[in-house]
Length: 158
Image 1 (spheres, rainbow, N blue to C red):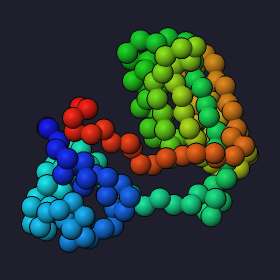
Image 2 (cartoon, rainbow, N blue to C red):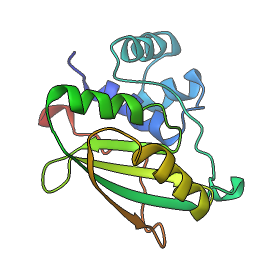
Image 3 (cartoon, helix red, strand yellow):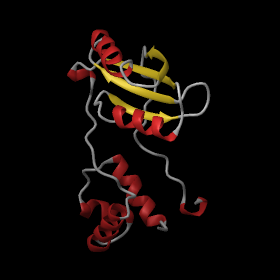
């Protein structure tokens, strides 16, 4: 799918405020409401827009611990990778999981209420998985920057 400058404007405004009305969005991108809604539906149907979410203040809910976990598997064949990923996707605490290059195989960002809850997550989930060679955990001290808005390239740069 080829995106043009209007599509990028729509995406930019939706990232800033996903609750914007179609009429306001249309006004901001220079379209009338019907063609704007048609473009929006196309972006959704084509998978450019994956969904709409509410950002929740996790500290207000008592989810105060963020842990960066690096995992090294004993084997790195396709089945081993699929098995690990299948199990990790079942865990709500895992906010992000990336297959990475380098010394470790996976980078995880986990949010959890307490250190005791993390200890239970580690011992009852990660360390019970088959094929785990090494796990390194780092606890964040302070969130310096966390972006939820993706910097969009210009249509010409694509």
